[in-house]
Amino acid sequence: MIKVVCGIIYKNGKVFLCRRNPHKQLGGYWEFPGGKLELNENPETALKRELYEEISMFIKVLNHFATVIHKYDNFTIELTAYECKFIEADFNLTDHDKYEWIDINQIINKKLAPADIPIVKKLMRTN
Ligand SMILES: Nc1nc2c([nH]c(=O)n2[C@H]2C[C@H](O)[C@@H](COP(=O)(O)OP(=O)(O)OP(=O)(O)O)O2)c(=O)[nH]1
Image 1 (cartoon, rainbow, N blue to C red):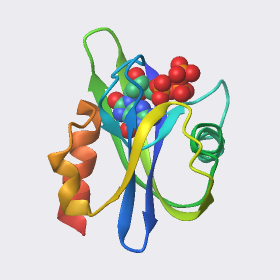
Image 2: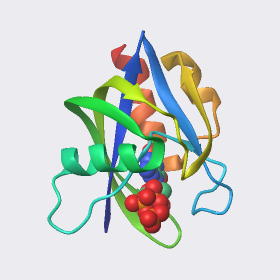
Image 3: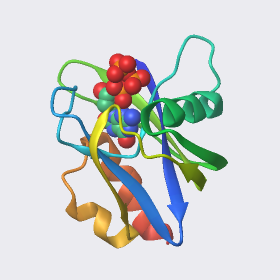
C-alpha cells in the first residue's frame, strides 16, 4: 500500500486546492497537495517537503484530520490529511496546472480525486 500525505491548508477561512497535471496519474483531478512518504520519513516532514517542492509553500502543520484507505484499479493508497496553516508561498507549481482558494462547501463541486471525497465530506460535517 502506498502511503500518501496531504494538507488541508487554511488562509482567511478558505482552503487551498490544486489540480493535478494532465500527464500525471489522476491527471485533471483536484486534490489537497502532498505526496508519497519516503522510506522512514515522518508524515509531517514529508508534507512540508512536498509542499515546498510542488508549490514553494511554507505551512504550519496543525493536527491530523483523517486517514482514508482507497483502492484504485491498479493500486491502493492510505491517504492521511493534516490541517495546516498557510505561512507563505511563491506558488511555483511543478505537479499541478491550477490552484484555487475555495470555501469548504464548494469543494465537493470539483472533480475530486476519489480518495479525497470522504475527507471533504468530513470537512463539510465538521465546519
Ligand atoms: N498528493 C495527493 N495525492 C493524492 C490525493 N488523493 C489521491 O488519490 N492521491 C493519489 C494520487 C497519486 O496516485 C498518489 C500521490 O502521488 P503523487 O504523484 O502526488 O506523489 P509524489 O509527488 O510523491 O510522487 P511522484 O509524482 O514523484 O511519483 O496519491 C491527494 O489529495 N493529494
